[in-house]
Image (cartoon, rainbow, N blue to C red):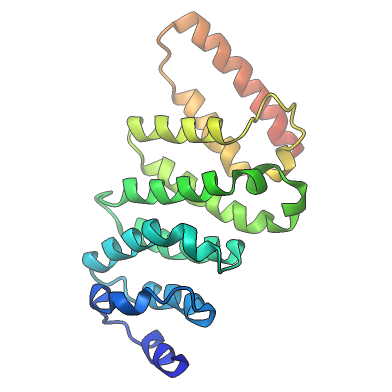
Amino acid sequence: MSFAVDRLRKRTDLDLKKWDSLWQLNRVRYFTFAIFDIFENNLHVRQNKRYILNYIKKHIKDIRGFYRPDFFDVDIVKVIKKILTEDKENKFLGDVFEIVKRLIIERRDDIFYLKAQRDSSWERGEVAKLLQDVYRKATSELKEKIYELIVSAFNLIEDDGEFSHYTPSDIFDILENYLIEAKPINIEQDRQNNKVLLESISKIKDLI
């Protein structure tokens, strides 16, 4: 197995779908670490990019049970960032958001709140940066979904900043940009609410 994997790691011309049965061996620890190296080396065609995104969405939960979550998240981010950078027409933007959403929701208790995870700050920062990359390319509708994800995933204001230093600064940057760009329905009320939120976010960012 290790010999075959080492050979595949050197290939840059694979049709990933044809090797689907092999990628299903993702519970073999050595092979799991190699899969994303192989994927990253084979982004030369759109079909492979689509396959990778679908593969991650399908297996994100079961692979993480056999893989150190922090390493898994970073490997995902590395591959997806390349796909997103090359995606000039934003064909994969929705898929990328869904994956980032899964990463955040499935780990929200330990990513954003548990002090025991303080040693994972770099890894969760990479996930947050990817979310910000998505936000920069997003439509107004997708920006709304990103905002709702952040608000629902953790309390940023109600905890008076108690956990702010465990939250990546990119999250606050997204919120700040969203509130600045927001077009309020009830102009006076929403403008006042946004002003209060922006002031709170500014104070929290100063603590980070």
